[in-house]
Image (cartoon, rainbow, N blue to C red):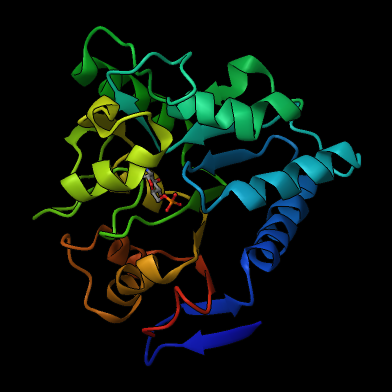
Length: 251
Ligand code: GLP
């Protein structure tokens, strides 16, 4: 692993050979903190990037090293509208890739509801849940090829609270691999706003692959701008960027 420092910035990027090394490193951070605080508040992301990390958490649980019995999880986002029991929903993704394999109580799973009758009211409800936490202990993040974090898409502002958002064409195309046909990808989502992410005590952003190189460059080397939502993390107190060589190739 090698570290990339940025002139006069308080953060650095750690570059690994592959996603397996990244997963081990990320799991080491989370497991150590969970051992010190069983009532852990863990913010979660979906997509391919965190999957090897989730596999590591499952392995640590199965080895008896950690328990999720007192943990609460908070997911970044959910499509809207979508049936939360469908495999394509982010809740379905989390059950398949983590929740079904650990001892996390059902009531400890917090995620926007894709089948809520009123999307705006659901955004307000989820924000109230987040406000009650005072901020998660660790927020796991990926980053979209357009620099989005959660579903905070490129725009002309950073939106603080949980909100309903339209999905960019790029995001719909990027995420269509999880659906039978691109026409089935929802065009809207409920997303934790920048405030929920920035209130985390620590963020761990995982990015691999050439298709993330430009987003990582813009997020870490350019001045923060809503055009690249991930760049807001430059203002976060404690974010670790875990990259492979491809994702770090423009740094
Ligand atoms: C989706 C999610 C994001 C995720 C992004 C990248 O848009 N809402 O939270 O970071 O995809 O996904 P992947 O890791 O599969 O590239």
